[in-house]
Image (cartoon, rainbow, N blue to C red; front, side, top):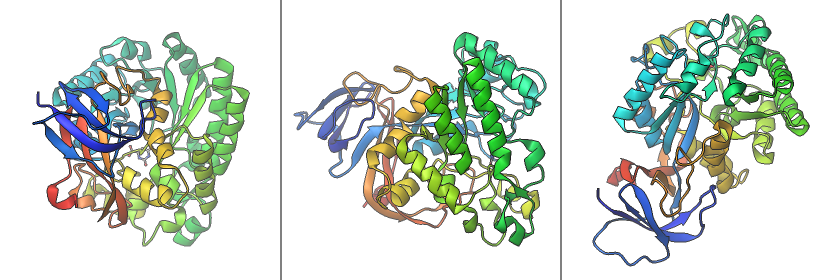
Length: 437
Ligand code: DOR
């Protein structure tokens, strides 16, 4: 396996490796040395002066659509998209066809991803059989399988039956499993298209009230408190959800939460011309909610940024607003938009952003080395991302590796770009020479 030398990179490692400007030597898939001015000759060399080297990112919420939705995304296209976005590990959601609700299907998906040898894949299993919300799926068997499923969710739908959710929380504690809640009370959200409020009224569309999320956030926090289960709240979007989360954390409830780039950067005011690219669940909320999310990111109430990468075909999205599916792609735009809109705007430290894409999600999922998170130290697997913070460019969804083109940031001028992603020491993605200036 060829050796590779990265020269003069600014190292930012939330897992506790060294900082400063260093040379990093990679050999046989691992980090062989991290030091100033390494004296090695004849290696393939990347001059990284002015660039940041970080651990490969961890995506904990992506829809890769396989099996059953391969026209929208495949494991191959989704994991390729991950690498282009700087992610070396991905947790995929189980709302596939058939759903990932038993050991055989999760093992099949995990084995296929292993053969692809792109980014690492960690399937999330269903809470309920068939995602129907009626009886528990084979959670323990999925956990005991080779896919070693550690997190469960019926993402895409909330679990309406509180008794079932309580049972799931009691059940997964046997193996310290994680319950990921898609907090949506369907009796409040049914038929809704955008956030309920002035925008839904102006657009003449049925609204999804903030309450639909908040009622279930409240319930799931209570259930987690009662059962002692680890609970993770997916894609939180409202100010009151954050308030409840903050209070629950203070009380010692084992609860974590993620925010998506689109809920952090866009509001319902950005929905223009009935463009279905902006149709997402939970919906884009008010400016006040966006502000609250950013504060929560800043003060540590939010534990991780996850994209909720949700590709759909152009044919599926190019219909009337009411008929379009919910979802946006996110893995190839997340770093540049977050860096441009939050870090360069002075709202967030770069190190904090990197934490939210690496150590934060690892803590949520309970991932430890060697699985993920060994950091930038000698002997660690070389799963790394090199960030060119000076590269200014225009996001173009047509050039994504993802099959999804439904990116709300398409056409945006951004600064900050993935220069390359290394997986097991190999160049898994590299920006074309012409674009790296
Ligand atoms: O917008 C969304 N799309 N939200 C979800 O919860 C599911 C996802 C999908 O699967 O398309």
